Length: 52
Image 1 (tube, rainbow, N blue to C red):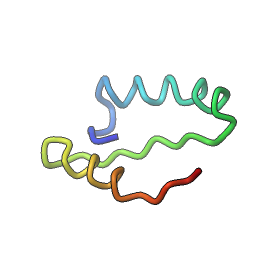
Image 2: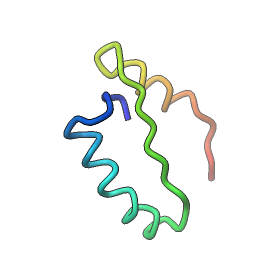
Image 3: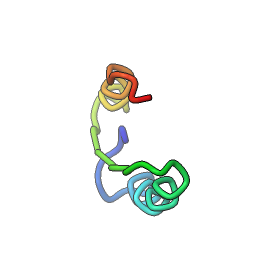
């Protein structure tokens, strides 16, 4: 998540995480990576290897 902890987007992501876990059958972890107008979080996400 490319936004700071405690904001609307963070609360929303943490609220839907349990539903995503149930739907995907995989653990869902919300990680905050704020900065650079969301650029840091988005680049981090794009550089992660595929997980199947």
